Length: 247
Image 1 (cartoon, rainbow, N blue to C red):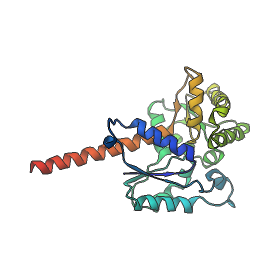
Image 2 (image 1 turned 120 degrees about the vertical axis):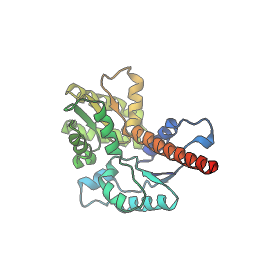
Image 3 (image 1 turned 180 degrees about the vertical axis):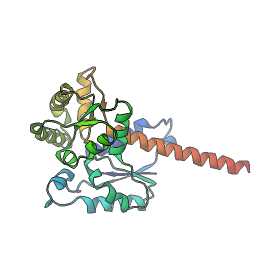
Image 4 (image 1 turned 90 degrees about the vertical axis):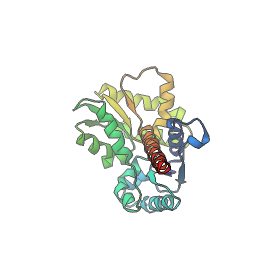
């Protein structure tokens, strides 16, 4: 069973669950992936905590969530919040079950489709950018991260806030403009490094037929990995059961 550490934010969590369902090749209820979600919207803001050492840390509440998922019977944990991965090591230490690394998964997916040395635009919160979560992973894979201009960071935060307030459509034009700026500066692909941003990009994609470069959605990549792992485990268990029957 997949454990989802959610609530960061609630809209992004629901978006992840929808993408996990969409990625599942199910024809009946019984063929869908089992999951349990721990959604705690009271987790302190992750970006603020990274940028301001005096701000409340989100780690204690996230640790509570990880442990609650383990007690609930989860076999692995997914965290549909990029900025939360700043505390990835501490979260993995707080549980005995695997925790998927969305940033690493997305970075590997990006690198698989680009030439060595290609530039990758990163749209993310100021906390994620300051922590260099994507920059470090992409550089290790031989790619060059490209950040938005400093005067655009506040605008990205406003897009994220709009999604959290259920006003994603109103921020779509702003997100498209900032993404286009990265494209014009030479980005060969753009990573939506905040789980609120794919929710907003949905409205951008509805307005344009082709943006010209790939837009990478880490939420979808994480959802597809969860489904892939669950189905692989299901196949192994089925095979083991067949072997036992044959004996």
